[in-house]
Amino acid sequence: MSQRKRLNRQTWQFTRDIRILSSAVAVGPREGKGPLAKDFDKIYPDLYCGQPTWEKAERQLLEDAVKQALKKGNRLADEVDVILAGDLLNQTITSNFAMGQLQIPFLGMFGACSTSMETLSVAAALVDSQYAHYTMAACSSHNATAERQFRYPTEYGAQKPDSAQWTVTGAGAALVGTGTGMKGPRITHATIGKVIDMGIKNPFELGPAMAPAAADTLSTHFLDTGRKPEDYDLIVTGDLAKVGYQILIDLMKDLDYDIAPVYNDCGIMIYGEDQNVFSGGSGCASSAVVTYSHIVKGILSGKWKRVLVCATGALFSPVSYQQGESIPCIAHAVALENAEGKERS
Amino acid sequence: MDYVIAFIVGGLICTIGQLLMDMTSMTPAHVMSTLVVSGVVLDSIGLYDPLIEFAGAGATVPITSFGHALYHGAISEVQQHGIIGVITGIFEVTSAGISAAIVFGFLAALFFKPKG
Amino acid sequence: MGNGSTRQQLQMKAAQKKYQELSKKYVPAPRYTLNAFKAFMVGGLICTFGQFLQWMYAQYFGFTEKTASNPTVATLIFISILLTGLGVYDKIGQWAGAGTAVPVTGFANSISSAAIEHRSEGFVLGVGGNMFKLAGSVIVFGVVAAFLAALIKTIIQMIIGGGT
Image 1 (cartoon, helix red, strand yellow):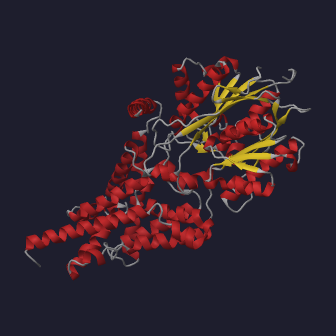
Image 2 (cartoon, each protein chain N blue to C red):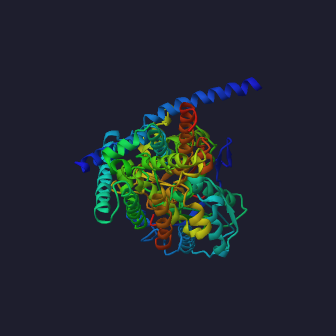
């Protein structure tokens, strides 16, 4: 790999050996009944996660993920220089309160459902630029807190259309550092997305709203790195779900990229066909939970040598929606690869 | 039979609501507001009372009847006390629905937690 | 510079419109007939049950045909709120759509679901302050419409009748 850290405007190349040293994931009951259940570190049997409110439950998930990631990586919270974290709630209260418990220097970030890769990018960059020895990237979402804030009270009987999505209840955390003595997927590149708004206004059509942002970031990534879709064994988006999945394949085809052979979407992967989740999962946890368990394990086991994770976010609020505004979206992509047996460059 | 007519009329009103929700970008709240206003309008042109005679609960159970009750309250107060009734009479007739909803809703918040 | 950015904006608007048209093809259309049928059946059933309640209240509890609708509506509201509290109503509503939303059951559910959900913010600000967040528009528009309709009707009658 060349020693350039900046590829064009939007892609960061991590020239030091930056690894996901460990990662962990905590989820709710529906995710725990899905096809990836065996990869998850902790599954709660109900949405309250032993807490009195939904909001506290989401914090519990986030704290569990961070603590478990530390444990798996054999580090103490005190050894982490900074944690990047975010969630869907106003003022990212989940992260704020969880970090109050964990007492790690904290930079809160909001990228809606793109937060996982947004935080992972910066976590890697801080280690690569030697501002930190160990960083963490974490994010969470919870079906009930998201419904409560963005849509309706959870017991409301309104009928949702088939294009709606199901916010994933879960949290994922990754410990990032240089690869001394520990195995872990290597973080090689991060492509930072721009806000893309194609004027979609319907919050039950987030797949169509976010697909153009994913297309923009993915094509930028390919241009900046000189790579093609076939250079990856797997390309995933965070939560385009069934409707957005199809749109993205066609949008990329129009740009002369055929991603279909290697493309999947975390929102589709996390739930089984028999689970009533409309068009698929959404939320910060959609990409985080699948990436920090299933994909990391797949890279370590050699199933996939090189993976591109593109987390997609819908950057709207209940107020902006009620005021008739469209939904601006963004996507951030991080390239991970299996670096065992490779020389450190 | 009364029951069959109630079934059909009530079902039809609901079907109209469903079509509005599916074919336009109206949210449930928009559709309900439209139906309530329709109840007012139909009553003001003298069509809702005959509908109730004909369909019984098929016309009193849908939310349109709430509009009918509000209008009725205003008009009967006007007949008794003059034009000021359009303000003073609106809630006269409709107490059952609103009171029940508020009281039971409050009690529900006391006894139940949301389940997601 | 002004021209350049306006042209960019126009191009952007055109691209947006094109994409919106395109994306409509991917979004699955609602199952119009099936949904209408389900709404018809469930709505019809609820009204039939209401008809039974009206008969029961008139027959056994001394209500007249006119006034029996009051306890009927209250009973339906009670049942809806109970089902909402038990966490069952939302699942029925997802299936039945307007079949449960249009009858007074939907009104009751909108009030109670909001009340239950916001209890975590306390009874005054949470329950009290949020109870009408979904049902408020129904009440507001009903009242405003009734006011306007009654006003217009009364004025018309005053004009036609030449005074009471």
